[in-house]
Image 1 (cartoon, rainbow, N blue to C red):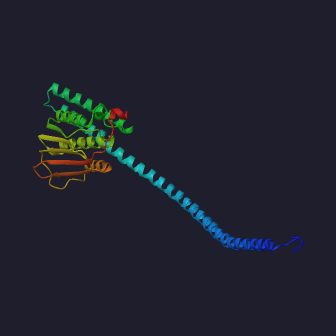
Image 2: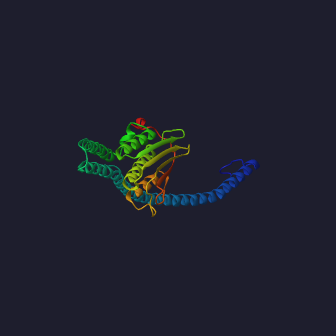
Amino acid sequence: MTLFWPDPTAETFVMLVLIVIVQTAAIGVGIPISRRSGIEERKRDALIARLEEALHENAGLQAQLVAQARESGIQDERERLARDIHDTLAQGFAGIITQLQAAQRPASAPDERTDHVIQALRLARTGLTEARRSVQALAPQELGSAHLPEAIRTLTERWAENERIAAHVEVTGTREPLSPAIDVALFRVAQESLTNVAKHADASRVGVTLSYTGREVLLDVRDDGRGYAEPVGAGFGLISMRQRIRSIGGHMDVQGAPGEGTSVSVRVPAFPGRSMEEDR
């Protein structure tokens, strides 16, 4: 002891003892802390490894989802093209054939034959325009320069003139701009419903009602034709309409009875949107 402290006193001895006690306590406390730190570090390493594994799995799942989305997109595009071909080209060709057949009737007067040929040419031009719009996935021609109520009114009046069937259009509620998808779907349903009336109903009157209720938009197309004896739903036109309405979260119902006409009723949510002019 004299080598370090030439004159050791009681105070220095006590200080030395305290230093030894403190160091011993620090070492005693440090060992468990060090062990605990090692355990926590191993846990952290294991957690990082699991996270890396989960990220790897998520990358694989993401790749699968991308592939599924791509396949679903291709299928949706095929269905869209099929619907558009049916709604535009097929209907246009049917109208052209009807007009040309009327022009070929021997009893037709020259002026009537000329009118039928003019109507056929107009339908052909409209079909060509719609085919181009379908390829570009744009809205129907009538919606390009008008809102949905005016577009449906123009469609119905033109249809009534061509088919020589009385038709009335009524719009109720406060008109609000809807999303373009809803506008197109409702317009196509009205178009297909009128086409079905001309083909199958043998009706004398047709009523088209477009109702804005705030949270929903309703479309009804009713005729006083022959109706039907069996439930309707197997034709491609009706399938196409139902798919369109389902794609925007809506519901379509077709009702009728022999001799009591047919009604097509559509109910869709009124998702707000911008006008076609704003979208362009």
